[in-house]
Each structure stands twice: as structure tokens, then as C-alpha cells.
Length: 289
Image 1: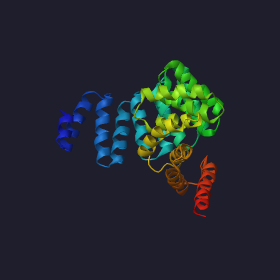
Image 2: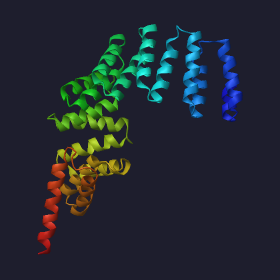
Image 3: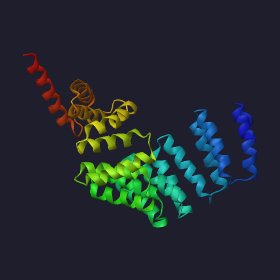
């Protein structure tokens, strides 16, 4: 009934219905979530937070309410209070995976990688057969430049789910860029592409591996697809430009490499992009003489 009133945009009637439902069952998480969603949609986060805090006074042993409160605080970028709420949820329910995961993601946002790693490892201790914590640990280590650790966690993901495309894609990228086996990288990228055929990031990975194997004509369609979907990304444009260059499409190569460097001239590969662009310009100059 409350959702019907929301659909009709009868906000007050919906709130009244949900409040009655919550009074009848003070631990009904879904109902409290509906109430907070209404307040957030109305751009009244303080009311959403206040309503959860009020309900917690009636249900102090409900870990899900603390977790909901943490999400609301995080949405309003009150990170310290969000952290406290997630920790309280865990205190009430020691094996509360969602709260551990939320806490880990909060630490990533705050730039506190060591604490995020600890939270994700807590999840693994409780439930070692889900992919999320391994994947997120791989992401952290990859961003830190610790590719050996990143590989280890992506490989663990694939042991749990051999067809998990994001891990296959990231592992393929590491193999292709950091001294791994290109054939293995290609196999992983192809599998990821089969699982998520419309993912432009995977298309970029697959195309770049074909390029590194000397198959520029095969690489180009994948890199074009990626550049079409991921706008103004210097690395994607660099990859496409280099594939055009190796395929003999000099004007297209100049266009993409120039666009890439105009966005950012300090990314990994920017030096090669600049050197290739200079070669192309020099070739043009020589042909005019």
C-alpha cells in the first residue's frame, strides 16, 4: 500500500502507511528503508538520519539499522559517523558481512587502504567462498602498484568463479602489462569478453593484447568500440592511436594520439604516444619537401 502511494506521489500518505507498519513491527528493515528513501528523494537527509536514530532507540539490538544509518551518513559524507555506525553494526552482529564490506568500501573512499584490507580480510575469515572481498583486495593492491598481490587475489576470485569477467579482465591486463604470458592474457580477456560482450573496458584490454601480439588489424575494432563508449579517456585513445599507427592509418593515429595527449600528457604510455606523434609529424614534413 505504501509503495502504491509513492507511485501516486502521495508522499504523506505513503509515510503514514509505513509508519503504521513500523509501529506494528519495529524491526522491519524494509519498511524503515522505504521511509528513509522517501526523505532522501525529497532531499531531506537529516530527516532520514533522524528517523533511523529514533528507531534504533526502540530496537537497539538490530544491527541492520546501524548499517542503514552508516549508509546514510556515508551518503552525506559524514564519514566518521558512518564508520561508527558500521562498527556498531558489527559489534551487535559479529558475522555481519554487509557491514564489514561497507566499512571496507568506506575506508577506500577515505584513502585508508590498510584498514580496508583488514575489513575485507575479516569478510574472508567469516565466508571464504565469495568473490567480492578478493576482488576488492585485488583492486586495492593493483592501485598501489603491488601487482604480485593483485594477481594473487584475482586468481583466487577465478578459483571460486572461473567465469568472473572483471577478475579475468584485470588479470589479463596485469599479465599483458607486467611481464606475463600474452597467450594466457589473451585467453582470459577473450573469456571476459564472452561473459560481458558490451563492456568497453574489456574491449580495450582485449584490443590492447591483440596489439601487443602484433595483430593491429584485429585489435582496431575492439579499441574503436572502447573509444566510442569511454569518452575522453587518454589511455583508451592512446591504445587506439597506436593500433592505427601500426596498421598504417597515419592520419587516424595522429588524431587519436593528439587527442590523448591534450587530455593528459602524464599517463603511462604518454612518452610513447608523444614519440610516435613526433615520428608521424616528421614523416609529414619530409613528404612535403
